[in-house]
Image 1 (tube, helix red, strand yellow):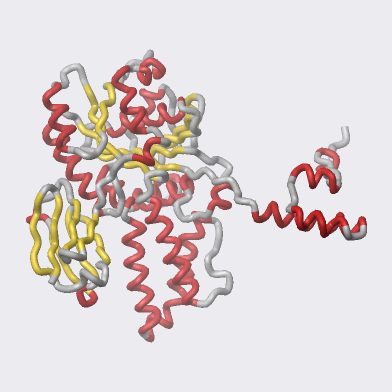
Image 2 (cartoon, helix red, strand yellow; image 1 turned 180 degrees about the horizontal axis):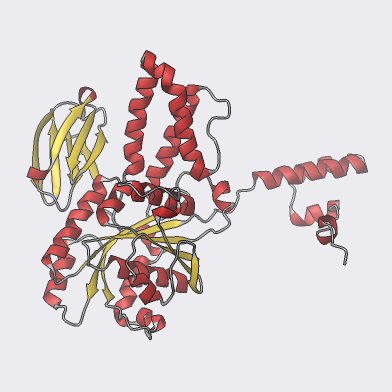
Length: 441
């Protein structure tokens, strides 16, 4: 049987007539009067040009971007359970969801009742799962060195979520998901990944100064740019160089990293939730600490969850909710490891309703978030919201003539750019109500 050519499978559409143009698009009266006085052939061509221009000027429909969701908490507090609960919630809500696991813990396999491998596997409607293994991306004869897991997991999430790609590149993805739920190796590694792009911008600034202001830098600069471009284009599938001048390439790299870091500050693109055992003071205190560390990394926490069990005390849960105010706080029921579990019943459970509301992509836009930095020009002060820390754990440094503050806490460093009205030397600092108030002089 002869194969059909593409032209026979998809014949070209007939050229639209002027009447069809007028039906699909209403021209302004002044254009209609001009067209009536033109010859028939010229009128048809002019009408086609006007309609094409109108279509190009019409606002395009907003493109749906992939959201990344992750959970932070002390080991054993329920991060994996919460990740699976969230993935099931999004999938049953009709969103194409992928659960990304980066550990050899088989808990997810048991709870989803499917074997999770290094390639995405469909667990049920709208839900896929994949396990990240660094050995899959290094050479067969090479082993995994310390730090490789974090680097390759960041690259894998970049390909799935598309932090630095534009909308057109994201739309060309073959396996595009609405939500990526990431269950990392540890909370500390996840927080470092969150802050990686903002920290990389600082390194890029220093490298650019070195490349533009020293003889050695001017000699090695092109090689550095080529290396950075190859690293970014490997995940974005597009080179930044394309014959550009060095200054333009540095600017492009800076904009790419800025796009990546800005994603973590947008609740519509990134959801970060704390998880704890309300009955364990150590678990609660760790969650408070991770809240402050996440702010230090340049992101915001969207809410907090407590894993409820039959032995949970009402008093402890009320105390936890007060400690994490104004964050929204909900409970997730303990999920049985039995293979006969019913996820429909779990999600319809009375306890699960508030948790699903908090996880909802639509409502997450309206979660009240405490600003991490507040400037008061009248009092010439800076207020830093730093839950989980006390004053003795925070170090302050000043650079560039008092125009910047470097805040060090929780193994994270954050640069605060001061407005011109507040710039100066640090006059004093006090810690009150989970906030550090710095007075400038």
